[in-house]
Amino acid sequence: MGRGPLAGPLVAAAVVLPRFCARSPWLSGVRDSKLLSARQREMLDGDIRASSTAIGIGAVSAAALDVIGVVEATRRAMAEALERLELQVEHLLIDALSLPEPPIPQTPLIHGDARCISIACASIVAKVARDRMMDDLDRSFPAYGFLQNKGYGTPQHLAALQALGPCPIHRQSFAPLRIPPQIEV
Image 1: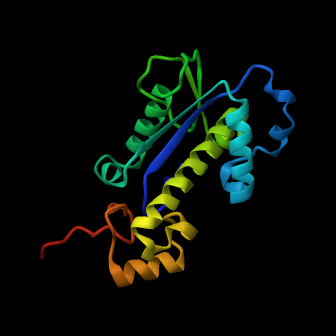
Image 2: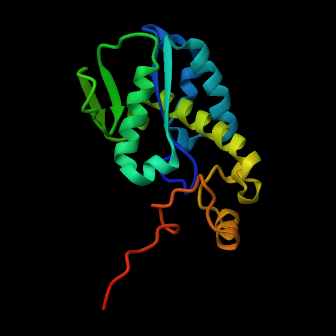
C-alpha cells in the first residue's frame, strides 16, 4: 500500500477471490505483503491475478496525500480500487479502516492483512503495483535510488535527500521532509 514511504503514491487494491479458491496451492504462501520478499510477492501477484474474479487498483499521488493526509488518501485509494472492480460486491473486508462511501456492508479488520486471505491478497497486489510505479519513477529521478528503496527512508535515500533536497514525488508532509511550524517569540 505504501503508507510509510517518503516518496511516491499511496496505492490500494481490491481483490475478489472466487468462491472455491481455497483449493489453490499458491494460497498457502499468501501472507501480509510486508512479510514476503519482493520475489515472493511478484510470484503471488501473478497467481492472484490469474485466479481472481476481479481486481481493482487505486492510487493517490504524494502531492494529494500531502494536502488530505494519509488516512483520507488511504480511503480515496481504496474507493478508487473499488470503482475499478468490474463487478458489484456485496460486502467489503477492509484492513483497519471503514469507507464512508459506498453504502456497502463492510467489516474493518485490525491487522486484516494477517487475518484475512483476501485482504492479504489485496495487500500483495497493491505492494507489487506500487513497487512497479516506483521502478518507473526511478527513471525520472535516478539519484534517489527508488529502484532499490521504493521510496522508503533508507540511508542511501536519506543521503540523497540531504544532498539534493526533495523531488516532485516526495511526500512533503512526512518527516524528515516536513518543515516544522515557526514559533514566534
